[in-house]
Length: 114
Image (cartoon, rainbow, N blue to C red; front, side, top):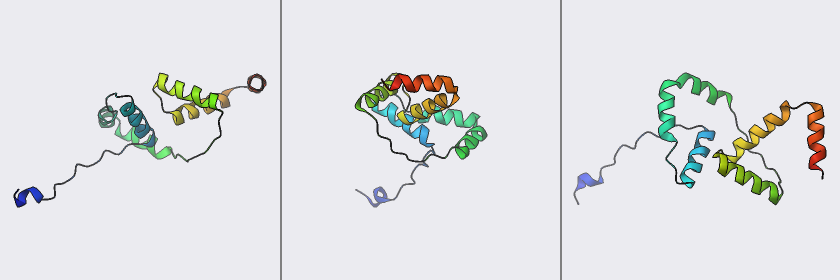
């Protein structure tokens, strides 16, 4: 081994991913699917300013919830089938719930109490 082998090599610059992109990429890795970072790289080249605005407007906070085993199983199934991160699914469900009228909300609440 020569001394040239010991030279420090410049590391490749890491791609900056949003939290959502990181989670989606981790899910893809877990399922043995191709990396999302290649697709993200292409879309960033075409929509850099749009992505920067989206990332700047999204601020995520950690939250802890208590769910039943059945709810966790349903959430896991939904995440696997839709290939969408669980945290994103929950945000989508909250948005949909908030869009419902008072009558629809009351009906859902009554159904869930059974």
